Image (tube, rainbow, N blue to C red; front, side, top):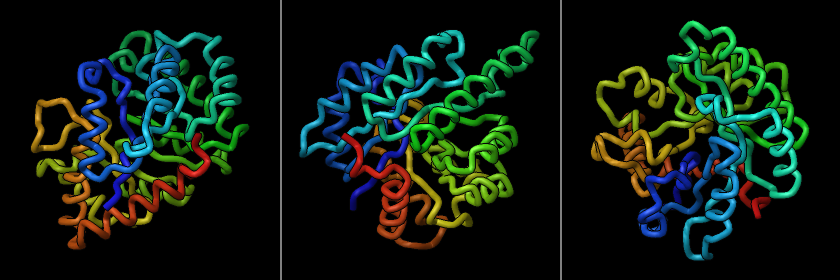
Length: 268
């Protein structure tokens, strides 16, 4: 079985002491491809170096460049111009991680209107780049899915993934109608996550993606530990159990979904 981790942050400092070993464990666990999503402009060069370093026998790491809404204070206007240059020269697999996060304290405090507007302006600017470069997007959306949906309808050519989907069934089906895929990770392995588990049991399998969001969001068997791509199989196993199908069927479908969305053949 060849699995694809559609969302990871292998560039984060949590992997500095054993990044190569973590990638080797991913290979041993059957991971064929890992998408490394950016958070800030400062991390782009780290991700580029990480993805260029991979050998042919290891999982292939693919870069996605973008600016995450939770790191608003680290983004500058010039970074949008620089992002366009990176898209022109580096041939990333997607633009990400972009989106809106209206859950964080800053988006609900005294300056929330300004914070929310700044997030939205940055999100729209990156959607415009995705539209221009014909690239898929990797979207972070917390307490903001209706606004994300509204913006995506203005860019009908754009497709992508909603990473760590946590919305309603209605929102999920609306996103699927727009051609978007939904990423699920370690959260669904917890029995208390009843809403998420119902969603992965009933949504069309042809629009689901597997992800770890490592080093964050570990599965229930690694609670309070650092997450890593090698643990992805546990997500596939839970989806198989909830849908009453084989793990092989889940892996085959989600791998095919990721290949369709991200077109790994075009990645450098």
